[in-house]
Image (cartoon, rainbow, N blue to C red; front, side):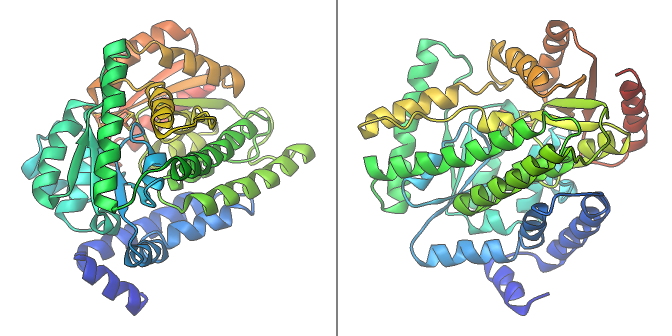
Length: 421
Ligand code: BJ8
């Protein structure tokens, strides 16, 4: 390992031994799951590189930006507007974690029946393995599910850097008003921490950058509607995960280049799987990096994943923010409207999510839906019943965690499901 990186991690307070275990596990897993895929688009090489340098070059970039006075802001949820962070010249990074690291430590401070996504971000902090968390100047939590809310209290004890943004649980007029107020409070917090004023110009720039990123991800999604599908679900998922870490302008350019190549593939009838391969849409909890378990199992069982109705997926890029605002106030209003139009199971009622799933399944020509819940995630586990009833579509519910213990059992269920499609 590059000596520069080792000193960089040491300066960040990373536990080198634990971190080494994480990087080794990640490299093996990546080799086994990603690099063994056949006929991958050339454009995926960039994303392979990003993964290989996720704890190296990207962290170096963040630290260099910090030296120039920029602030790094960590988030855990797609209700936190990235545009506002860019508008104070900040850098936004997603901190949800998708690996079983530090669970023993996490279970000493969290109830055992906590979802793995929460256990992972607390576990990463307790074992000091995440250079992103350690680089952040502010960690922005939000009042979505109960587990997260309470976990942020603990995270604040550990870091003293947590700011919690209130997210309502109903999309009523009162809920909308509350969220708008919260965005104004968030503006103040960001201005205070960055020493930068959020102006009409910087907001316009932030909105434009994030809109372009979302447009590129929408373009990628549309290309997955073709048969044969030009990109695997695993690769598309990787791009969606990297959206939370990479420099947004560079990322957008690379996604568009990948899409150019995929368009060529579509024209030539080239796919990653044969025409007629069963097509699956996944809906449910987010897939934080490096959670590739379900996509891998589905694609190793002979189907292809064509979309994710998930926060690492469509719920991140579902709509753009109108760019025709003429004041800071108007822009924050536009952001509040756009963000509250995200349909997370933490809301009640949340019937719009069912419409989103139906529309995606239709648009992407999915033949079956796999509903993914992380064990102990009450909102998504509860919502599964209503979603299944409302859909009237081949449906399989998978309730799992980050371990590999249930891989055999899930594979058997997925294979049986795929046979029915
Ligand atoms: S908008 S899905 S990112 S809250 S899996 S921690 S819900 S118990 S992650 Fe989420 Fe925002 Fe909603 Fe999306 Fe809780 Fe469930 Fe765990 Fe979850």
